[in-house]
Amino acid sequence: MGLFSSTPSTPSPQPTSDGAYIAPDRSARDRCYEARDAFFACLDRANIVDSITEADKAEEACGKLERGMGRECAASWVKYFKQRRVMEWKKKKTYEKLAAEGAQGMPEGMAIPSGAPTQSSRSPK
Image (cartoon, rainbow, N blue to C red; front, top):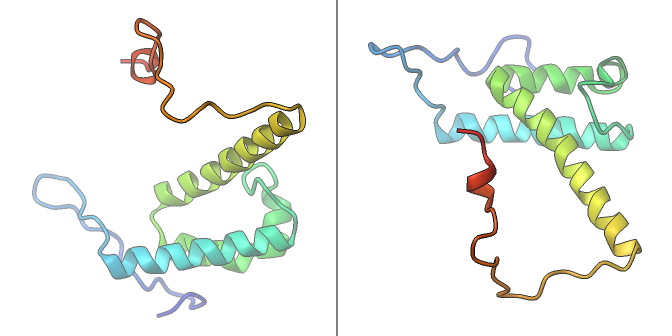
């Protein structure tokens, strides 16, 4: 079955004897990425950034493609892709704002001063 079919083209992941799930193979991932890209292209055409908070608008404009992504991708991947899309958009807007304010990038090879907190030391344990 394909992207626009009414039944899933990928079977639900089955747990192994230890309870873990088998990761999707390359072709299943490729189908997921294609479905994601088609859905996001539709959102771009409809000027929708966040399909979670604007779910009604996204459903109206791109519902068929969103359901296609839901069939081809694991639910956790769908949630991650949608959240990452918003995060990437916010990051882009922040960079644009900083550039408009005259901010300059850090010089290449500039090191973090010793003793300064690093990303790993700030993350919760």
